[in-house]
Image (spheres, rainbow, N blue to C red):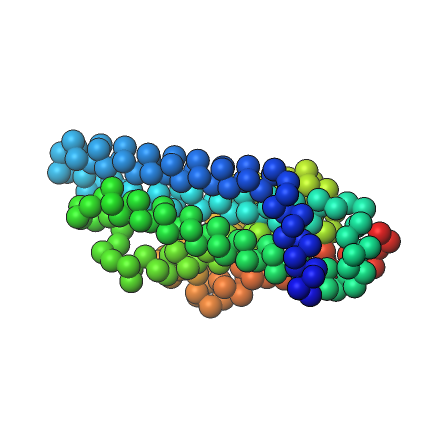
Length: 251
């Protein structure tokens, strides 16, 4: 297992794409901090009546969906960088190869997600200072941890989803499109459905599940525990499909 994991890590760090993904995450963090700064500047120059109508200046709300997508692309890269499965020459045990890829993507997703959320919430806190709600959505670390934890979990799930879809279709481009549809395409359509289907469908979409997992939604369709189960279901289903394909198809 160690040999397989080392081989997967070596492949990942010797290509350019992961560094491009990390650069993109860095850029979106800078963008998020800039948005927070501009919101605070606008808040400070607005009348008191208008200040009460401001939204939160927490940049993590902006960067989380993008980090989810970028980490899913990383998962797709790990799955599809070896389309002919040449790695089976070094690691003939396909189950071990699958476990190594899964462990690598899961670790990378948690590390990137944790760092991104820590930097975005930390920078937002510095920018917001001691300003009151609604510009500052939380008073201290205890208030932000549920949201940050839910966001990191969603990043982990999307990374594993990218891996699972990539193993199933063996195409980076197709995987990125499928993940994009799951994260942004379908969630944009579900609110247009007739009631109550719009609420029920939206409740199981990844962008809304993050809020439900964090427990910050008033009267949510799903409890935090149910939302965690549904969110993990994305990874279980896609990884299951990828595992079946990897274990049964010819190299």
